[in-house]
Length: 270
Image 1 (cartoon, rainbow, N blue to C red):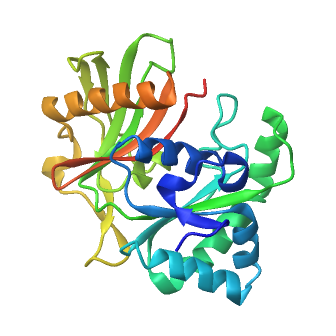
Image 2: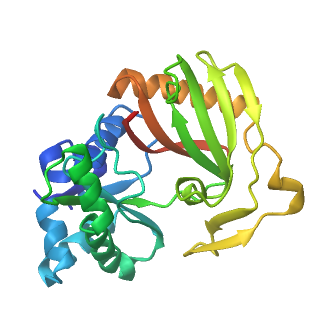
Image 3: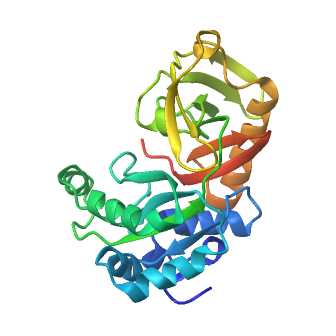
């Protein structure tokens, strides 16, 4: 189902209606990059769902029939993910969400965008304090390995890829639950540096529905989670994202059953 306030993710190019995250994923998906299937909910629809409007909830559920659960529910606020403000960690993400839980997950995302820490961040980076929040609902990738990829070194500006990754879903990296493996990779895919982290916890899809946190086996805690072939694939994805979306990108990725997925891409915020 496609209406003016809910559409397939690849069509959500209007940033003022669906938010920056949805708009950038839409451009990436339309260009053939490996973006998981999903839908984009506009700011007005999200506000209505958060208020419990039954018609809005029904329109959302109708659109989601084209996307297999479980879902990843992510914020896509207007003004989010720019060169000056990434909002990483400020707005809630809900993973392993079932069809009957989506409306509550949307409410939690909306509430997080109006939290004291998120509003303080808005003031600090000079973004308007009024919160307008779109939401992206995607099929959850059952990741074996996931993490973040910077297309340029965010610390010194060097023209090299910097990758941080861990076992399972990327939540453990984004929320700082582990010390991830760290890689430096030159353009072209050759590894310049590999530093093993301490990845003692993983969050993974459980029985095809919902997620579970569990300890990692001792043998894998300090074993590198990415090999040279995967590093080369990530370098290629970085180049594709730069070509389609612009240079200096901050990317979230996942490998599942040997396939690479693009979960998010935003301008690199120094």
